[in-house]
Image (tube, rainbow, N blue to C red; front, side, top):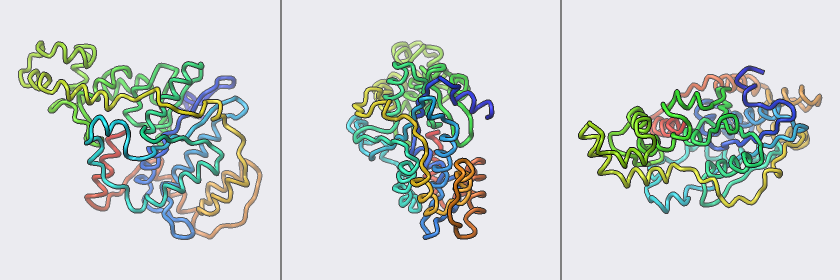
Length: 346
């Protein structure tokens, strides 16, 4: 196990809760793997990347250690943030046509692997993740959020809560946040509020980019400090812009802030990692035509399944390499727009 993985995966007797940003990884896998289809012709490039990631995590998590794992999905586009600001995420393009049929297959993958999943109407996956992260911290359970979403970086808390980018196989802690944003995790919310986010249509303050936002937060301590002492800013245009768009900055902070008190019903103990069951996993892998994943599963559990159609294995090897390198092929302007929106999220 390499150093990055060792930082995020537990030593014996150290319980951890793995919170997986389901659709966040699905979109990244979709754009990283160019083409892959099941034997029936259904596109499964995102399903493959997602399933491969889950199986890798399961190999590194010990059920006998009392670890927990949960996959979190978005339930729909409308949340409480749309009530606060009707233009929230209004500019998001629709999902690519080849990705739409893969959404239910992703959920099937989670069920086949015996993992629990949660979604909640009116809340985003990030809010559910924030809620369970808080609960876990209160119970002394270490939290690993499997995502590279910049919004989730506001949750990082020393050794208690970290992010793990499963696609790049790297952990994201306070040092990485400082390098990316120029501030510690507790100040990420203030920086995001000032700079805004075009992919989510969060307005921020016009003319304030990431570097300027970080500089202001470092100088004045917080967004509230920036707004309260805006008159001290020497640059006239910047000073006037901040004073004029004060309410817009505060609204942006409310939109970016993750709710850690979502009314979730399931308890953390419901997410205990169980032993894998070949009778549920292998039929799904066979139907998808994931030869290489079947091989890995056979090797781990000492089981054998019937041969699959030739050709799937080599395509999967190319797909896995594409996930690791995260190359993207964009065929038209619409694809570019969608990829840029997702890239900004990470």
